[in-house]
Every structure is written in structure tokens, then in C-alpha cells.
Length: 243
Image (tube, rainbow, N blue to C red; front, top):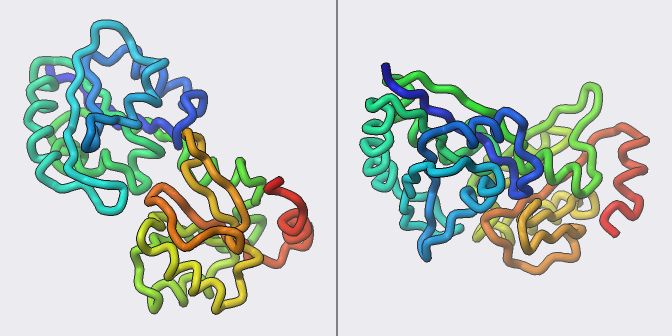
């Protein structure tokens, strides 16, 4: 009988934001697999470390990437057979995924390659959007509000109607697109209703009004925008929520 494949959501960076189920799976899995960026750094493993079991084998998925571009498919092509070999031997494999595995998660790459071949379970994680809303004290939406999650990689002609159609918006994957998106929101007169959040739950966390930022941002940054008409929420957003 084959082992089980787990996609384990680790949350945005704070090891205390893992679920109880995630912590249990991390303790019990025979093998853990995780992305490893250039320079030998794995944020995912550092988040999970307090919850790992003893004598676990590890598979590092070495990505040729920076925070400004998506990881190459080749790394997952190489990792999938290594993980499959462990599963074929009856060993459970927990794949570490920052945030949530199915919300822009890197686990999607392995799920596409292995999910149809092996028993697979997804352990949800706290997304960076929810963590940023909690940290900034900016409600995402209320009652009938429409909420949109948009990648900054979209062109302005795609962002404009999506922003116009929503009451509340989270714009992710800022990186090299930040100055353009910031200018777009300024042109719409929405800067005062937007908050910038960077590396929530991680070292170097920054939160400030969008209008007080510079013109550059890392990939792991987002803008939270509330346009809704809920008076109590608007009053709260106009208060000293970032100070």
C-alpha cells in the first residue's frame, strides 16, 4: 500500500498560525518536502521547524528563482519522482507550503503531477490575506460586500473592471508591478482607503498606509483596499489602525 501525500498549509510565517492538524501531520510524516530557494534558504521549513518530528527524511526542492518571478517547472519535474519513490515505499510525505496549498500555493505544482496517482490530503492554512487583515485591523468585507483577490501581474485593463466591481480588494504578488498598481489606485482616488502590508508574520514585517510607501515592494507584499459602504467599517478604517 502506498503512502499518503499531504499538502500542508503553514500560514504566512508565524509558526503559531499553523492548525492543530498541520502540526500533527508534520510530527507524524516519515518524509517532509519543501521548496529551497537559491542560497539554500527555505522559509517553509523554518516555519515548520518547531513542529517537525525526529529522524524524518527531507526532500529539498531546489528552485532557481527569486521573489520576483515564478519558480521553474523543472524543479518540480525533478522532485516528483523522488516523492513518488517514497510514497511507493509506503512512506507518508508532507509537502510544506507557505500560506494555503490551494491558494496560489507551490503545492499545486506537485498536486498536478502526483495527486491523481496517490492518496492525497490537503491541510488548509491561514492565507496571507486573512493574516494581513488581522494584523492591519482592516475588515475584508461585511454582509453583502463583494470581495476580490487579484494578482498584480494582471494588466491595468484587467485590474480596472475587477476593482470597480468589488467592494473590497486584496492585490497580491506586487513585486515589480507595485509602482504601476499604486499609480492605478491613485488615479481612481482610492489611495486613502488602501493599506500596504509586507511579509506579514515574518521577519521584516511592515504595515503602513499606501500613500506613505515608496515605489518598490517585494513579491511577498499586498495591498488591502476597502471601498464598501458599511459606515462602521469605514469609520474604523479612518481611525489610527496602523499606529
